Structures are given as structure tokens and as C-alpha cells.
Length: 233
Image 1: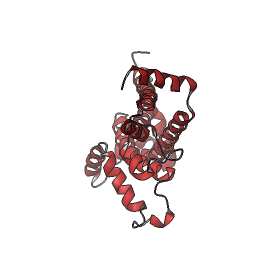
Image 2: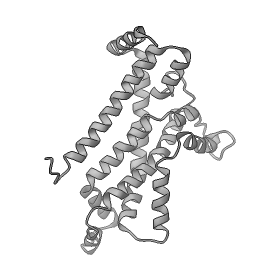
Image 3: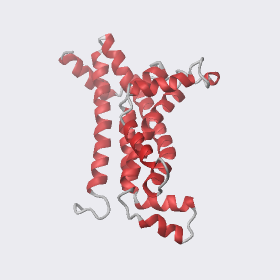
Image 4: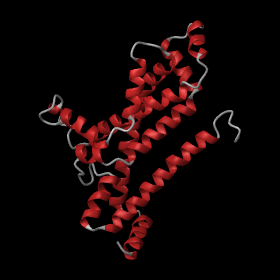
């Protein structure tokens, strides 16, 4: 890579090159949808782990913490085995589609949401759930109230999961096939363009990914520093 590649990358960003825009849109769309799925599925178990005692709870918590570091290629392999033609869901024809990428990324984000929601909500007053139960709140109403009280922890969990999935490459490559205009993401495009020697596009995409990462970290720091009752307010 040379200085000309950097200048060309800046030019691509300045004119917002069509392919650069499409790749960025794919990455953000896949990450947003997969994070939303992980949040919808993962928040209730996180609340349950924080406020309910049951047999095997400690084992579930330990397993969830461990799965936070699940390698992306392992998650991709797991989903691949389900969606491939030889797999139980092969007849759906989802391999190498945006849906497959989203499923794989949701699998990566799910343990992060569960674990961080549990960790954050467990710091709330333990009597909260019991008080709501005494007042006659339904299970759904209790969950909504607890999530509202711990909204900073929940939002931090969601942002962390988003940051994890938007920068992953293994599942997107294995399940999406890196198809141009269809399943190509920022990370898979960077890998491909670098192999081709097209450093300008790689640098431009890297700058976009860094901007997204900065935005996620800024959001997390804002939530931590300016949460209700924070001494930084």
C-alpha cells in the first residue's frame, strides 16, 4: 500500500462510491437486524438469570459468559451445518443469502446480550422483582419494568453486541459467500480487496468500519458516564 492508495480511498469516501455505499449498507443492515433479533431473544433470559433462582442457574451463567468469546468461524460452522443442503434446514434454501448472515450474526450476539443484561440487572435492588410480584404485576409487566429500570445496562448490552457483529468476518464469509451487491459486508470486502491488491477500497472500507466502531464506543461511554445518578452528570 502506498500514499496514492490513501488518497484514492479518501476520494472514494468523498464521492461516496456506489459500491462502497452498497457494502456499508449491507453491513449495517445485517448488523442492526441480527442485533435486534439477539436482543429480543436474549433480554428475557438475562432478566430471568438476574432475578430468578433455579437448578443449573450457575452453569447457565458460566456457559453464557464463555460463549461471549465464541469464535466467529465456529458460529458460522454451526449455522452452516443447519442451513446447508445436507442439514435439517437445507430445504429452505437460505445458504448464501442475507438471511443466513443475519442468523449467524444473531448467534454471535445472543450470548453477549444475555450475559451483559444479566450482569447489569443483577446490580439492581434484588427486591424489585418481588415487589412487582406482590403488586400483582404479570410476568410480562415485571420484565418490562425491570428492563426500564436497568435500561442503561440493557442499552450497553445491545451496543456491545452490535459492535461485535458489525466487525466480524467468519460467519459473513461462510454463510453469505461474499456475493457482490448481495451479501458482501465491510469485513469480507476488505479481505477480498486486499487479496486482489485493491488497497484503495480496503482503506476506504476500513475507515468506514473505524467510524462505526468509534460511534459504538462513544455511545457506550456516554451511557456509562451520563447514566441516571452518575456523578458525571
